[in-house]
Length: 484
Image (cartoon, rainbow, N blue to C red; front, side, top):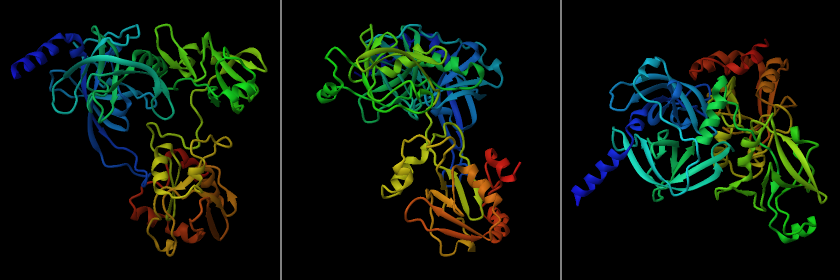
């Protein structure tokens, strides 16, 4: 029995196309993630590894989560002990894709570029995955079938096409290629722990869109139609709209602000996107038998920054070209691959609220009255709005004696001035001439803090030195603090 199992494993590996084995590399990464409680610093360095695949132009594709916050990246070819220095050339945290290049391109000499399949694979097709999962050091090849293709959420509110397979994907497989009939059909990127061989692949369609976006050196992201919609399955809703069973689509619940203002009205029905009918649940049926959410069609149909749609308004059909946006404006935006902005003023460290920290805030703050909880998922109320919070506990100093204010407390006012964003807070404190500085918080339960301005100025350098803080602010707001 054991001999037959070993023979099957050997045959599986032998059936894998040699060029894909040679095109698959192991990626070694040193990372330093942000420290949410000490935004002036970074977390201790950590080591992790993943997989990647060589493509044309001497480039290497992998997942963003493999190289996010990387300080060192080294690429190890298959059957080699060399770990070649590389850098991250482009990254999309939202779509979990990254592009690497070697510091010395000659290091890839002799490694073939993997062939990328042109057509979308069929459900049921046999698939092989390549990579370096935990449990060993050499290349691993597993086989299975494509179980499902659908439009699904990725990261930070982004969505895209996703392939589900039943070939095992484990930690370390991330970024390695998945192939059908010897051609790469996408990158392995995640699995479901505790499930029986459910893994996911980012298809070539999304990969090619990322590569095209990254050509100019900047990843702008996928286009969006930032609509507020609801399904139209309810009979009473359909009766109010006065529509028959043949009319399908999604209801516009409010007219969004910004670029879509004036083009949409409440009670409009989004009937079609391009030539595609939208059903009452927001799904479009494709010619190859897939059922994909209507959002999938935004990117393929976009032209000159607009997408054609058909609306039904007052029983009449309207052909409208809706402008797209490249990112959704969020009050608590994701950090993506950046480090947080911050400002240290005496014993206080301020930072904007980022989406990466919202989960921690919700877990640690009790009560629906907290402004972060109340405005979770909202857009800014005005251009440039940020929620500014205390990022860390009060830094130890006699100035804070008797005060109790902790991380995630949101600043409301400084000497009666409502704070709009971090830069506004910085300039407000910079320009104050009052003897006393009064800081009020927007969340209930956080004490009002009062300081003598001269005492804070006198203690600033001492507090920075005691806490190992080299710079009182992040580089992006340094000019605001210095008044330049």
